[in-house]
Length: 111
Length: 111
DNA sequence: GGTATATGTAAGCAGATTCTTACGCGTTGT
DNA sequence: ACAACGCGTAAGAATCTGCTTACATATACC
Image (cartoon, rainbow over all chains, first blue to last red; front, side, top):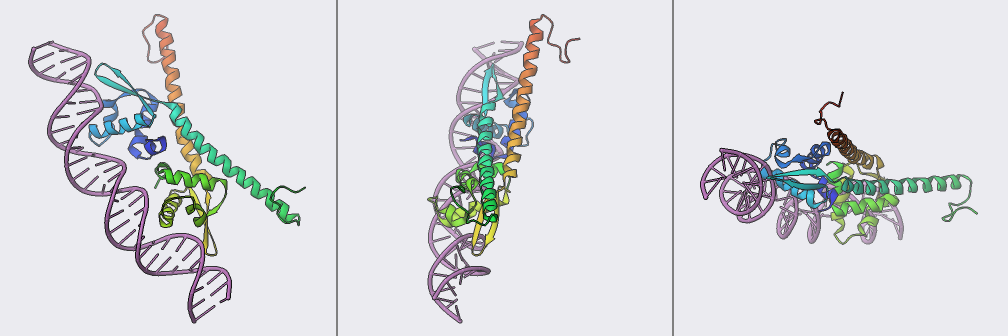
């Protein structure tokens, strides 16, 4: 499962919020939800498989912590789209400016 | 539908990538996919309802463009989790440093 | 060793998603 | 006016998801 798919479910986003403040055990996390504990466990598994969370076993507990790199990767994708869009807007602006100058909007810049 | 849910589907993310480089008609977008044109249309509707895309009707075409603010909002959430996590790491580091100094790890800072 | 605790896994079910095909509706061009 | 075009909407099928209950597994405690 990829990061965006993992973050698509509200419950899983809530889990990320819980874990981002500190490492937590499965039980602690489950206590914050109305759904059954196995249900939460399945969300945790999904988040781990997406690389968003990391598990660490200590005795009979499992402590989940955030793997911030995964979030950073998703953030990069978002940022890349924004950059491309801003570039597109800039191109458009230049085209309009060129058009206002009377010339036909040249595709390759005005020589 | 919220932004993360909208971006959860790979096809929809691909649409965002297509539209981020320039405004595109529904037909142009659909041509990039193997699924049927109505299928793509439904994805477009979902993205619009999530605020990720904006439609503009010109004649019988519909031109879709990116609404970058929606992506920024999602990016902010991601960043917030990362910040919280880094803060948590910093706290942990300080606790360990205090412990190494011989004192019991005081919850409220060492006076 | 036996019991309690913390948690994952299995199986199954209801409802949501994502497709498909068929059709409808507004625009454009003749 | 009417045919072609671009695109959305409707309805239904197939699949996926998110949940549940029941069970398995492993560590801790006595």
